[in-house]
Length: 325
Image (cartoon, rainbow, N blue to C red; front, side, top):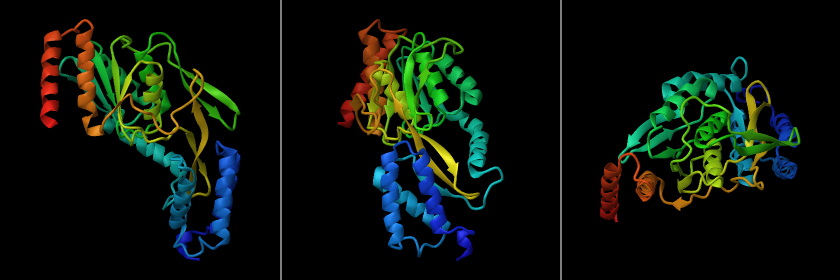
């Protein structure tokens, strides 16, 4: 066996993976389905001629995802191994890079007509990113509507989703919790009793999503939509509802697997299949669509803090939309 197997054998890796899924995968019947399919392919010799561990990990990942379409199901091979484990190294690298990416807040601006907008590329831990989030909310505190763009956002730390939702609700409100197979219980999540600065509880909110909005980005859109606190604009999200954890297979191999699923406190349910937008449009048109909707909402109520500017901005945006048709 070549060095590319690094002392591993397909049989040992497959046995470890399937044992892990049997113990931890959120749906035991689905874990059994995966095991049956992989055992059949193994018996047929499907993995004998692969070039090494990297190829085996790719093959098993593709097969598992084709069977059940779970975006939180991967077998990962790392070359070379990292001291302290690859998962720890990846987290350290992400934490080190986060300040240079403004902790996921790529943009915070005030659009024409006094509409605030955030472009949020990822959700980082409030322990490091909380000050940035609070500063962003302070920047838009006096706008008349707010647009949260999470197109292309893969998710991240759910605590940042909770922090942002806290700014948008009055009081303490239940959010989507998670059922965890290992504990056989639902972990409840609530908005926080305190966040720095002013809350943004009465003005309209719009969330932009696309097919590459996953996990925490979907949770943000789903919770705000279920509470009638935001209008979701764009295309159906990427469908990654489950909670996931990394488990070691060996020093150089890890498995990412779903260990729980979200459950909404008001009658259950989650965003399996993706969050369906209230206003469907292409991602390229989502910002303009939401901006126009925000301006109409502002002008249809009290006119906001800058009614003349809002009217002018809406007229310009509608003229641009007409020209594009």
